[in-house]
Length: 212
Image 1 (cartoon, rainbow, N blue to C red):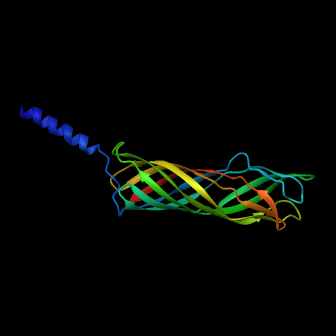
Image 2 (image 1 turned 45 degrees about the horizontal axis):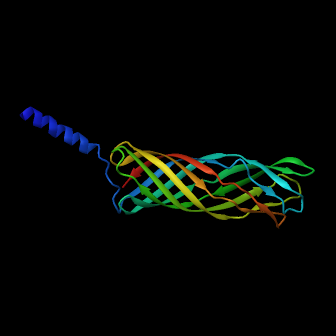
Image 3 (image 1 turned 90 degrees about the vertical axis):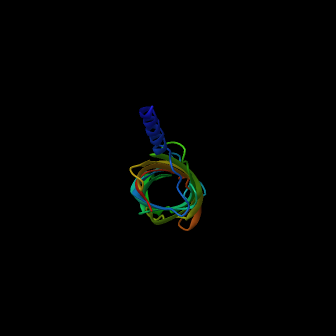
């Protein structure tokens, strides 16, 4: 009888150890990793341009280091800020009378999200979802076409976020995540409005996250 009680208590203890704990209010997490920005495959036309209907053929992806910081304002509810080193993108445009030309830009996409972390899945696996606002600033643009000055305007957009934390121990985890950013900045050629670049990227990330 005593042996059965001992086994039962051990089973209960094991079950409790597998119960996921909530991320409590006042907790901070910091994550360091890399992000892969994959723009949409259809990037629009600059049909308002004086140079004719310039088509954005595609925008190349890029990978850069990222940094996140999240503060839990309530149990399982956090506010996260995403920062990164500048992403570098080649923009292939089809210019009437010229053909394909390689333009370039750099951008920074800081994103602020409100997130909910689920705590009833598994002690070592914690999925989360979030939504927020993205502000992307562009700089060091180059059109690749002689006599044409390219300017991509800064843009605000909605950002969705989902991911999973795989816990290593009580404070550390490996995170896999994905974001979709509504990013459609206005474009100017030689100072004149030319149209909209439909970038709308997915951002895939992997990072090491520490809880404080």
